[in-house]
Length: 83
Image 1: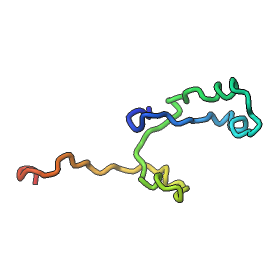
Image 2 (image 1 turned 30 degrees about the horizontal axis):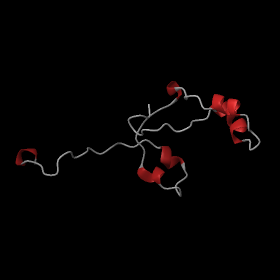
Image 3 (image 1 turned 45 degrees about the vertical axis):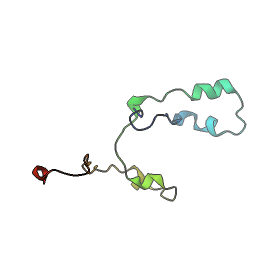
Image 4 (image 1 turned 120 degrees about the horizontal axis):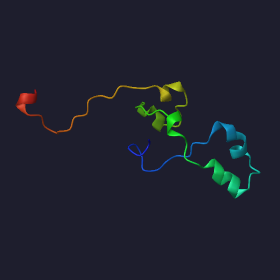
């Protein structure tokens, strides 16, 4: 699902193992490897969001709000017919 957006997949930890993932005493590599399985794409959504997500000072629900993308201009100069 994320390949068209970025060439690397972020780690999405299942909420059921948050406590184990955040435990500084966790040293069992086998257990950690089990947590690093691909996240179920059926549980994810993909939609455009504001560039506000690019700034760490923005940490609110606006960062998750869906936006409508403006039509992308694909040519530097438009022909007279297009104007």
